[in-house]
Length: 152
Image 1 (tube, rainbow, N blue to C red):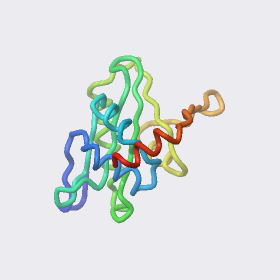
Image 2 (cartoon, helix red, strand yellow):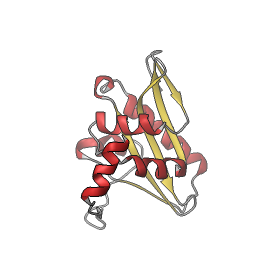
Image 3 (cartoon, rainbow, N blue to C red):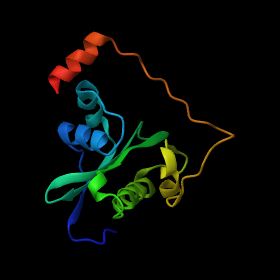
C-alpha cells in the first residue's frame, strides 16, 4: 500500500519510548510512562511504519478480543504526513479487522478533527446523533504528575 521504498510496515507493538514520542510529536495527547507500560502489552494488534528503522507512524487495536474493539493511537510524525502513511496504517488495521474480528463485534474509534474522512474510507461511519462518544478523564494529583515527569 505504501508508494515509497523508504518505508517498511511491521506488525509489532512500539516500544514505550517510541509510543510516547510518536503520540506527542504527532500532536496527540501525551501518555504517562506508567500508563504506556500498563497498556501497550494489552494491544490486540499493532502496526508501525518504519523509516530507516525508526518508527514514524503507528496504530493499535485494543479491546476484549470478542465483542468490543477500539482503534486507537493512529499517529504519523509531522515530517511524514501527507505521504499516505495514515492510510497505510488504517489499511493494515482494516485487514486485521476483516481477518480476526467476529462479524457481531462492535468496532469503534474516536476521530479527531478531520480525521473522520480517513476512517470513512475504511467503512467507519459517524454515529451521531443516534450515538455520541463520551470520555472520562481522571484528575491527576500533583505528586503523580511530578513523579511521571521524573521517570521520563
